[in-house]
Length: 157
Image (cartoon, rainbow, N blue to C red; front, side, top):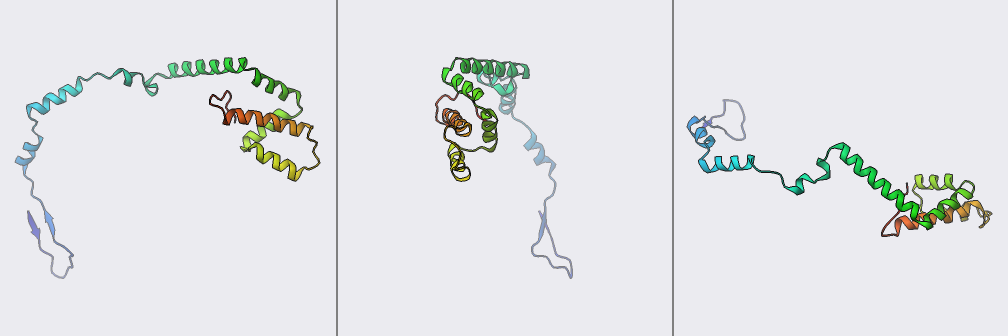
């Protein structure tokens, strides 16, 4: 290593050191011994484990889409068999404007408590037996099934 002295009139805070190229040392570093070569060959011959092959992110898109379709069909079958959920959907159809209101509340991500307080504050003359409050009760049933169930049947929103 050699150090370069500062030039006359120039201000250096530290000296600059330069390393000389040593080709012999580089050759020694680059040379692989036989054990390292054996390890490199062993790594190339490794086969992926079954766990790696079964990773869903490594599957072809067609397989992933088929699995998603199968899961959707299973969910629809489960929803069709759920009598409580079918009853809620039937009541939504029978209540005027319920489906529109519920979709709107889902888009706004409102909780049933927020909607009830809005009804009490802004619309105190609404009948408890009216379509708005009935829509709220249906929304509350769906909301509670989604957020307080170990096995939610329908994803809201």
